[in-house]
Image 1 (spheres, rainbow, N blue to C red):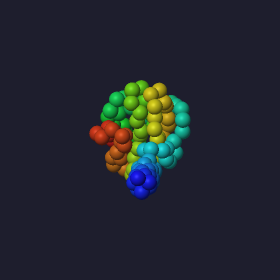
Image 2 (image 1 turned 120 degrees about the vertical axis):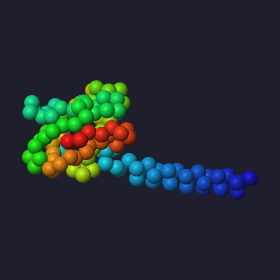
Image 3 (image 1 turned 180 degrees about the vertical axis):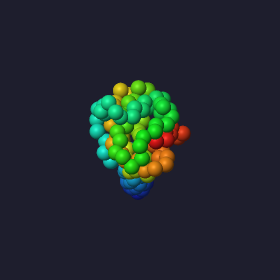
Image 4 (image 1 turned 60 degrees about the vertical axis):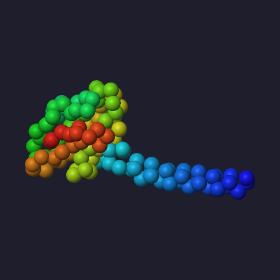
Length: 127
């Protein structure tokens, strides 16, 4: 009987260690934490403004001058948590709860750069 308790205990420990390693590995992805030039609060008046509603960005696209630093003000009036992430520019707001406002400062290259919410497939905006 004692032998089985040791085996079951060892299996539980292994599962906890492996599970913890997976959670640690997955939680470090872009979108899980803020990255790049992101500040809390609203931007200057000249910033592009984007709302993160439930599973959509509004507007669906934003036009900004290429090669020039710009600010994008993000608000989350929706019910779900979101993030605003561009792997190409290595920037992310990290988690944004309902009511949060953050400002992302980026220099967008010529062409279209996509930003996504990494938690909601299909939640994409072209900048």
